[in-house]
Length: 239
Image (tube, rainbow, N blue to C red; front, side, top):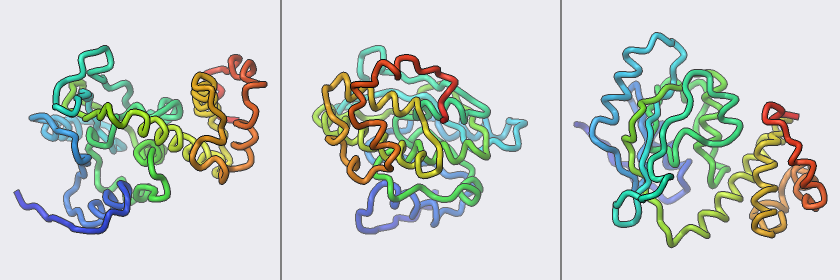
């Protein structure tokens, strides 16, 4: 197995992935985040899906995954094993959230996909994966191996930090939709609900002060209008 090690200054997750993609020469690209683990047979089973598929637009094959703790032990609750959810045209499903993986470690992607959709958005400090899957889904199909072939590490000591980061990243995604002239009401409702349950104001989210005017308007004083969100219709994601 020939390997090439690339050293660079820390410029964020998206930048590191983009550097790897730009140096890659193989027809497929797989991602593995720092402390995640691939289980035996992962790549072989994903390649088998690609090789036997009759769908010419298949661009991504992902897998199920397991959540492990700092000691590499499986988290023993109902959320410990995450099964794949959707295949084929997953555009509508992805609008409701990033169901592909808890990280980018479960995917195998045709290298030609990045030539069509571009690289990871380095302006996003989180949700880079979700943004990429959305862009890929506009042009390519997804499939999966229905087995947990990746272990994703959860650090309990970072849960609050991860929550704040998650909320900021979802706000960034809501802004990116708005910049494209699209209003993702499912994501808006999710953020409003989190703020309501946590008794937080939108101003506490990192990045709110530079958000798009539509986003700031929807999240400012939302408690007065939360009853309207309860009338939300799942099919009416865009406005």
